[in-house]
Length: 234
Ligand code: 5GP
Image 1 (cartoon, rainbow, N blue to C red):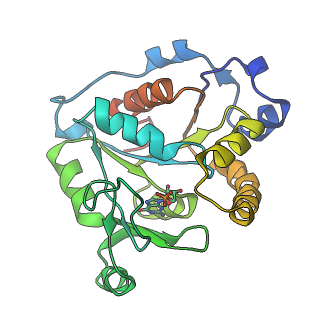
Image 2 (image 1 turned 135 degrees about the vertical axis):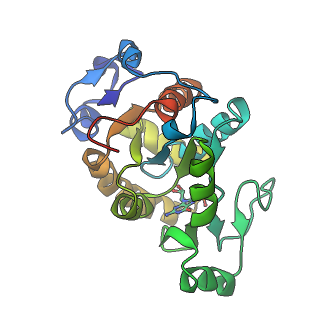
Image 3 (image 1 turned 30 degrees about the vertical axis):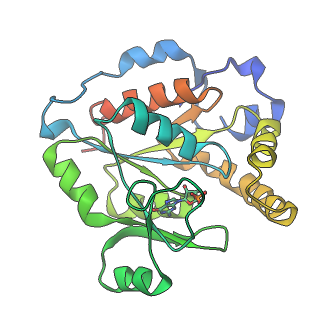
């Protein structure tokens, strides 16, 4: 299933084949009607785990931040990371900023649901217990993680819902990477190389959302997060 916020002819030809391949035809917003807006209070049985992944610079963090702000009832996992905080990032809100030693201890003590070294730099991981606690409380939970992490969660929690965030076009992905200005030219080059591989992973996911507008992508994701389990998944 693809939730496409642009009509197909608005997308660049690269991504018509690259992003939608294997997932059937792109579907318009009308497709949303198949999703039930259960919302908070719909009972523990309906709480589900949703995993959001996608290529570098596609805007996963921005979509997650928009959900954090507008839909506080949706719990978003706070990852542990060994990278240093950026200006404005708060320990315990955006990440748990931990030392290399502490991260290694968390792995040894089996405290992480998944973890990965991202872009050959820092390590990132999802503390397992808070996720299990929230789901047990009946609160929908969201993980915003990289592809390696999403694959690990698929192994251990296949009943989760896996959502791929795709860029509207390859050119737009390049533009976003350059615009955010957090990488050197060399890092950008290497991330774009990774991005071509990452885009091909779309077919491993249950649903694709095209991130043409952050707000609309966040709205689509929230509907999925609140939806009952997909048939065939428990
Ligand atoms: P940033 O350093 O820009 O915040 O994040 C870099 C990358 O790490 C992003 O692709 C983000 O999705 C990924 N990431 C953040 N938290 C986790 C996590 O807990 N596990 C994994 N596997 N990746 C993560």
